[in-house]
Image (cartoon, rainbow, N blue to C red; front, side, top):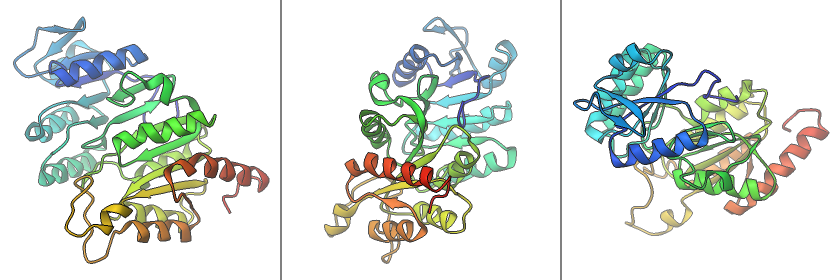
Amino acid sequence: MSILLSEDLRVVVQGMTGKEGQRATKEMLAYGTKVCCGVTPGKGGERVLDLPVFDSVAEAKQYEQGLNTSVLFVPPLMVLDAAIEAMDAGISLLVIVTENVPILDAAKLVEYARRTGARVVGPSSVGVIVPGVAKLGSIGGGRDQRMYTPGRVGVISKSGGMTAETCRLLTEAGIGQSTAIGIGGDVIIGSTFTDLMALFEQDEETDAVVLFGEVGGAYEEEAARMLKERRFTKPVVAFVSGTFAEQVQGLALGHAGAIVERGFGTAEQKRAALREAGALVARYHDDIPGLVSRALENKGRSGGSTE
C-alpha cells in the first residue's frame, strides 16, 4: 500500500469530539479508512459517528485491538501531551493536523518520537492519502475523488492546500499518485522531505517523486544533498514557492517555517541546489505534470537511471 499506510491500518482520532475532528473523521470513514474510535479526556463513554470515545489512548487500546495510528485534532497547547500519550500507548504513526504548536513542544515531541521509534507527520499537516485506499487527516476534504487518483508518483508538500492542487494537476494530466503527504510548513516537523524520500526510494509502487517546497528553512537543501549523494535514485520534480515574498521588503508571508535569515533559505537558492543535484525544477507550478512525464520517459529510456 505504498508508504506510511499499511493493510492493517487501525486509527484512533484524538480530539474526535470537536468540530474539525468530527468532520475529518466522517470524511476518512467515507473514503474507507478504518477509524475505530476517538479519544477526548472527560468524554469517555460518548459516541461520535457511531464510534466509541475513550478518555485516553491507553484505554482505547484495551477495547480496540490493533490500534496503530493516531490523527490529532487537539488544541495547540495539548499536542505535546496528547502525542506522548499516544506514543506511550504503542501508537507507531501520528498525523498531527493541529497548527500553531509551540516550537519547543514540537522539538520535544519529535525527539520523543525518535526515542520511541514512532513516525510523526506534522504538526500543521493536512494529512496523508493513498488514493483509492485510505487517508488520514483533512487531506482532500470532500473532493478527494476529484483531486487524487491511484498511480505511481509520490507527492511531498510543505503546503496543505498545494498538496491538493499539485495532485489535481497530476490527475488532470493522467498521472496518478502512490502516496501524497502534507508534511507541514512549521520550523520543526516530524517527517522531512528526506525522511519520506527514503521511504519512497524503497517503495516498489513509486516511480518518481514531486516535492512542493517553500522559502525558508533548509529541508529543500537537505533533499538536494540526498540527491547529489545518490541516496535517492528515482526522478524528482520540484517546485519552490516564495519568490514574491522575497521581493517585498518587510512583508511576512507563508508558514511558520518560511524564515529567511541572512540570505539563507531563499527560493532561488533552493531551486539552484535542487537543479544542480539533478532534480527537474518547475518555474511555474503548472509545469509540474509535463516535467513528471519527461522524467518518467527519460527513466524508461535509460533503463531506470534518473540521469
